[in-house]
Each structure stands twice: as structure tokens, then as C-alpha cells.
Length: 494
Image (cartoon, rainbow, N blue to C red):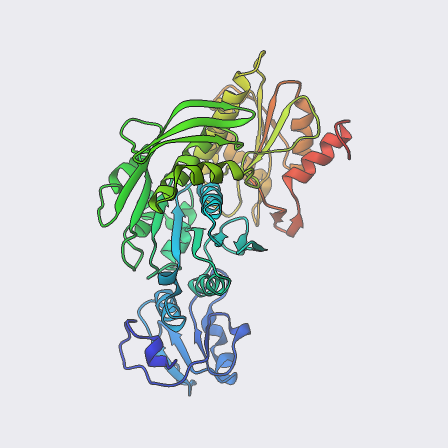
């Protein structure tokens, strides 16, 4: 392919020369001769710093939002938006693999990961070869890969599309974060179905305001620089969802536990065996029996049912796919060492997510006789939105019998300062609380406090296997720490 062909449909202020192109890169370390280097500022490093090295490697062209550098003898392509140009040029270079696959994108503050797992399970139950991408990992045609960003850069995504096609795949389901949308990582992609789960306070350190955060999410429903999706599965119980289901340009399939949703749940039972209900849908009744715990997972399942319907899948396939999704790592995941109380690990790291998880735990515990207490351990991330910390403290304290306030990923901040921010909200309510900045010791404290019938929630880090401190990143997995402490307490095998 030549450079001008690759930039077909990409706005440029000047004509693009017809020179051969062997590949695309935005990481200068991976550049080879004849490739195109896209230089734009990253989260930590500005790619423009590496333009001289790129030129030395014999690149075909430099793409940048800036005017040409005098030192550059290479061809320079100036564009209005570097990441939009990368996405569109990548789609052209690889022959638009998005049009040969069925893309499902899931966005929202909470529930993205679990919904992606459920949708992928349903599609595999239908016999499709699939890919699943998200916060926890990438799985391409059954082959697991590590993940770096919730939503990878457009070039990395398109390469996954190509690989899936080469492996005989047909469907890909992935989380589309607000960062990914704002940074145009899915710009120009053609989606068959998109899902909107909900919108609550998060990532305001990046977006600044709720309005800008909402605008980023809304982009996916509007096509994100490409055509509108064929179907949009939208949470009718969310105030933003109620507005956006009327946007048009797609066929809306609404879901929720409130009146007016097209897909809803009847005869709902939530217990320690999972959730069971009848999904009432435009295509008829679907019997749901899922091992996933908690009422909040009912919404994730209803969203996945909506996606299944958007692909015209049968009731039997959808039922089988939901049943086969046995666990989602770090999402209300049980840690069982034979102890007489329940321990769950969950990724909840916003006040709304904490409320959902704690309310779900209290509902499960209330089904027991006598009802057990809820003990919640949580912390707040450093170098992130400070204003949500007291909200998280208040949410945890208002719903828990005991709160253990500790560290999450403090990053460059002093953990005690973060704890103090959350403590202001926690002290607005009357719940008992304990403070312990060392997360390992805090987990031990919470488990030592537990007695028969209680539910202990270890919230915030979920699937993560590390902790980010000012001194660096260390190995840390809530699940492994909990198992070790339970062993020390005499339960199960150490």
C-alpha cells in the first residue's frame, strides 16, 4: 500500500505522496524501515521526542499534528488529530477488518467487564470463534494474552481483528472506556452492537466534569467517528440511558429492573448459589440460571441477553451461554477455604459500585438465619479524583456494619492523606470503622473480625495482582493474601 492510499479519507492540509508503506507504528522502539511513525503525546512520554531516531531508522513518513520539523528530510504528514488519523489510516492499511467481524463494544462506569464475559460466553455457546478484550485480559480464539489498557490503541485493536480473522473468528466483544473514546482509540470503527451500562462519578481527574465524562461515553452510541451501531443495548434504569435511548440511528434494546424496559427480570431469586430469574424479552421468555452472585449481576446478565438478541440468537443458546459463564475474576469472586463466613473480592472503586456490592452482600446475608454482618474493606486510588474519596467513605459506612479503611494503589501520594480524605465521608455515618494503611494487615484485621454468618468484602483491587506504591510496584493479590490469612486462622490448606 502507498501512503496516499493509507490516508484516503483522512483529513490533511496538504497532498500526501504516493510512496510505499510497509507498516505503521506509534512506538518508536518497534519501528522498521519503510514504516510510518505516528508521533503524539502519550500519558507519560511525548512521541515527538523520538522523531530523530525514527528518521534514522528510515521511516516512510512522520505523522503529527504539528508543523514539519526543519531537521526532517522524511515525508511529513500533518493531521488535525493524531489518534484519529492513526485509527483511520490503520483501518485502511489492514483493509477494514472491522467490517468483516461483528463488533460489540461495552461502555459505562460499572459492569463492563462482567458484561463482556457474559456476551462472549453466549457467542461461544452459539459456536462462534471469538475474541474478548478488557481490563483483565485478552482472549483471542481461546488464547489468553495480557492486557495493558482497558481499551488498547486503535493500531493494537485492529491487529487483534486481523489475527482473529486469520484464526477463523467472527465476533469480538470488548470494553470501550471513556479514556479510549476521548482518545479516539475506536475512531471510525463499525460496531454491530454497543452496550451502555450506567454512568456514575469516576475518572473526573481525566475528564474534569461529569458532562465531559458523559460526552465521551455518548460518542460510542453516536458511532465514535464511524457509522452508528446497528443495535444499542441501553440500561433504561440509568438517567443518562433514558435520554440516550432516544438518540436514534440505531435500534434500541432497553434493559433494566424498572418499568418501561424491553428486557427485564421476573421471579428473581438471589442467593449464594447465584441468580435465577425469567428474562422477559421482545423475543419471549428466557430462563436464566447463573452462578454469578448478587442482584447487580442481574443487570449485567440482562445486558448480555440484549446483545444475544441483537445477533438473533435462540433462547437455548442464550440460556446456555449465561450458565457457562461461571466466574469473572475479581468481580464478587468468592475466596473459600472452608471458613464459616463468606469472603468476596470485588473491583468496586467508586461510591456507586460500593453501594451496589455492599447492598448485594447484605441481601444475600439477610437470607440467612440469623443474618450476618457485612464487613467492608476498601481504599482509594492515589493520583486520582480526590472528590470521590469521601463519597466512597460515606457509601461504605452507611451500608456496612464494620469498615476497614486502608490503601488501594496510593501511587505517588501519602496513603495517610488518602485515608483522611475518605475518612471525612466515613465519619458522616455511625458505622464502626478501623484504620490500617497496610493493606495486607488490613485484610488480616477484617478476617480476624469475621464470625460465622458474616460477609467480608475486600473491595477496590479485584483481579489486580500488584499494588502501586510511591516506591514502585509490588506483587499483591487480595485473593492470595486472603487465602494465606485464612490458612493462618486454621481454615483450609495453607
